[in-house]
Amino acid sequence: MKFSAALLALVSAAAAFPSSRERFEMRQARRANGRLSQPKQAVQGPTPQATNATHPTQFSTNWSGAVLVAGSSTFKTVTGTFTVPTPREPSGGSGTHSSSAWVGIDGDTCQTAILQTGIDFNVNGGSVSFDAWFEWFPAFAQDFSGITVRAGDSITTTVTATSLTSGTATIVNHSTGQTVSHTFSGQPSLCQENAEWIVEDFQQGNSLVPLSNFGTVTFTGASAGGTSPSGATIINMEQNNRVLTSASVSGSSVSVAYTGP
Image (cartoon, rainbow, N blue to C red; front, side, top):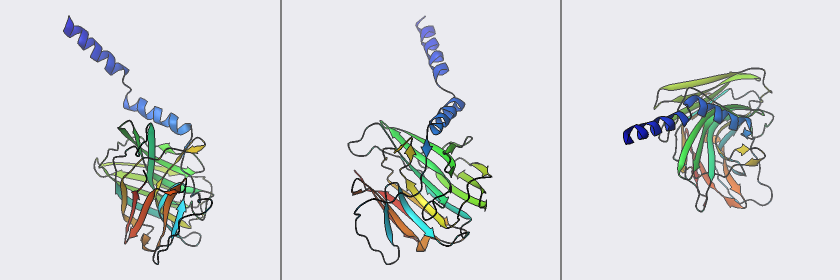
């Protein structure tokens, strides 16, 4: 009798646990509620002084990483590979904290549209989760289906603009062998003057989400149509007069380290 009751409880619990499809639909509902990557937001007011003979440094409230800037119609594809970190709550933090690593075209000097794709890192009370997504700003981000992401996975993110208003976003999980891709058409026009490798504090609804401690994210094999980020501008994240990241570029690698609380 005790065995039967325990078995019934296990069956009931399994039935109550959402399926992978249901979990995907719940993530999509969160996206529909306003998950949005934004163009680079400049810090208002005084910013820390930083000089770098090779890599000029800027500060942003939502971006950290590296950006190449050139004339219009220059950048048509951007790629980079990184290892998914284990996000942690910042010191003294509680509740859900998130951050996102992505590659993209435009969003810095050209802010009318962004073609981008990446991975969100979420943590809540020690429980971590990850979302693979694509976005053509100003539309909301959408989750990919058919791909799973875990800490330690090797991920390659690539965006390709086939025209100013169309393109593709592709994510490859080398650790699982999964590849997903989305094709865009009829979108707001890109300038194709920015190529970027970014860790972002993205927006949910009308405000930035609490930023997770993402450790260090390093994009390797970073390339914009064969151009390395060696001459890129470095961007560090600053919020409430505190610099939260330390970004650097070396050859074809872009690293972003969390330095916040």
